[in-house]
Length: 119
Image 1: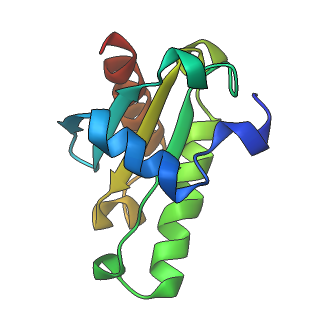
Image 2: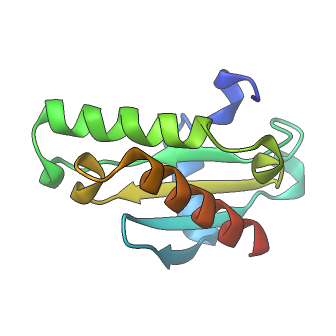
């Protein structure tokens, strides 16, 4: 697994840059935004960086944190070769992530990663 510090999008500016250049997509469990990282920013992280946004509309803090924990675990379960592209990917999970089978969530994240890598 890539280093945790470089694997996730952390800064607001990185999210904003990704949104400006992003292509949108949807899946049954989440929406997503995918942007190629410009060449000058690729040296910071070799592979994909992933961000999660879980708005307050999805529930209270307990539900939102559970959604984030499940999403992070689903991303960590992916093969490394799917995370090699120099992309910034922002995932917007839906509330159904709380109740869905975890194997289904992992498969959905894999499908999104494959589709994003083709972008």
